Image 1: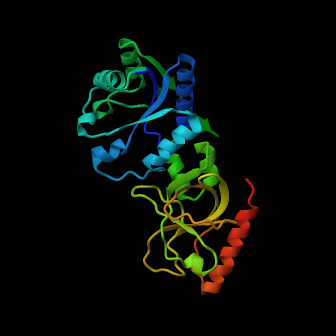
Image 2 (image 1 turned 90 degrees about the horizontal axis):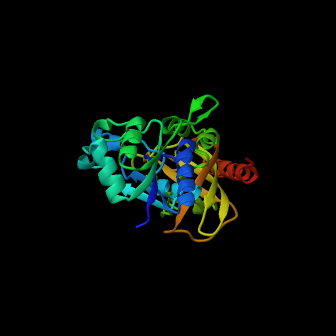
Image 3 (image 1 turned 60 degrees about the vertical axis):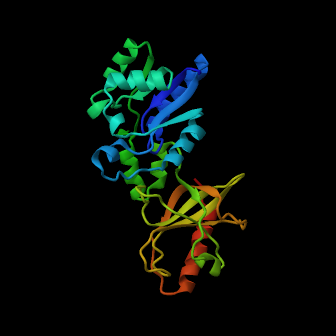
Length: 295
């Protein structure tokens, strides 16, 4: 088995701070002929320990995709953060997980990385243990933009506010969601404005309700879209949040296929219209605005 350089973290959002870790990991692996890897978890550790939902920026599959697509990481190692894992001492984590299980030669972590039972270990303890066990170690200092520390917590707030342009600055890429195209109520088709329908997974941070300019990554191409995140107050009264995207100048069948929606900018808040005709006229205006949008 090839030795690995392993980035450590949960990587929610895969933001610029995470990017510094992952870029360093990829570079070290390439320099030494090792495999580049990121070690993360299916569920957020706080959700396991406190039994409370933690709103996340991305699903596990989205995190894995971003890590590989943006930072050329070869492997994403998904650990199950269960009770037995949470009880590993700092030394056991380094010896049993990093060395014995994943054959680490070098690890990369952030300045605020915590590990071991009760999160007892920090970056200094990681450095000490890695030196003791003969592992290389790199600690990445915090990344700031305009005096603000790049963090998943701050980016979640931006997403909940619908500030996708600023979120993209701190993420280093547009906020995205991926999913399988689902069958909807065909309301868009009846209006002559067909849409694809996606669904937010449980415990994912919902963006501010409204209409967004988006980019839609399909199997072999990328298209501009207009995406509504909301409860469709004009045509529906069940309160369920839907994600409906009209892909501009595109008519192919996509049911059952996976797509990625990149959120570029917020256009307007969700409105209850007095008639279907008013709704239809505004949707056409939204589509025109999305078509003409420039970064």
